[in-house]
Length: 355
Image (cartoon, rainbow, N blue to C red; front, side, top):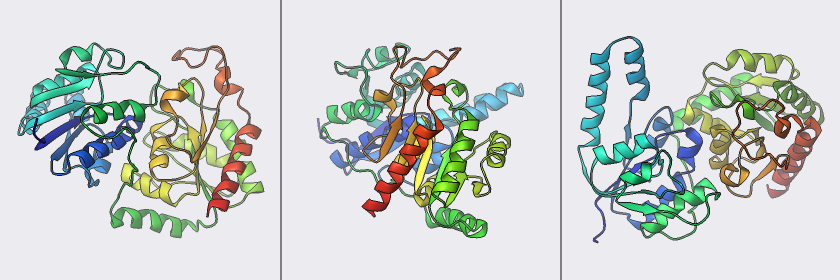
């Protein structure tokens, strides 16, 4: 087959999973440098992707707008939103459609798009029988490989090398200026420890106790110095303020941020501390040292990618698991403040020696 002119990659959500698809898409870009690559995505990460030079454009599925119209009992508006999306999706005839998401919705979108080759994951990786929609299926023998490595399987299938390329992501100067202004106005200096105690909706079972974060923040303030910067997103400000109150007088709330602004903030931080979330992966791609607190999540699949991190977790017979109704949560509750602080000190010393 001749080199493709147009490629559509699909990874709709979430933040962390989109980020862990980027190395594979960059590998495809390096393999087909002259191709036009568009990315089908949904949600707030679409703005961040639109700034990246390794893709030529973003097609956003307006899920929130459609859901909002349905909730307001405005089916006509929902149909208009969907039709406008489909018109955008079908403007181009793609030589390759690569579905990195592997769910029924993404598979249906791959069929609705106009394309010659539909490539997705085989049964071992695909969910909701999405593998039945692809003309070409990519798989391997191990279903517990890191998501970056799993995504690289599609890139390799398309002719890329085995190794994930180095990732350098971009936000424009006005985004960086917004964060710079916040740091200046808040008087933030010295080492900055960005702490994220939150997790995505529906995954609170993964969270370390917020009171533990309070004790940890106090220890960082008193024994290391600098500033603890508490990250928060939509619906989290009240709880973030509570954490600030129990954390000591050098802990601050971050400014409101969208994904590009949060990326710029994380690039200025000396360390990121938090659980298994998309923000953790954003810190990784911002090249910020990470201390990750893992509970029931499968670390072999979801660990922060690369070497610039320390993972704290408990090795238990029941872990990993996806039991959201677990009553004892020993995998997270048995992690002590002292254990996490020791990792913070170790990572901080390592960062100083590297600089």
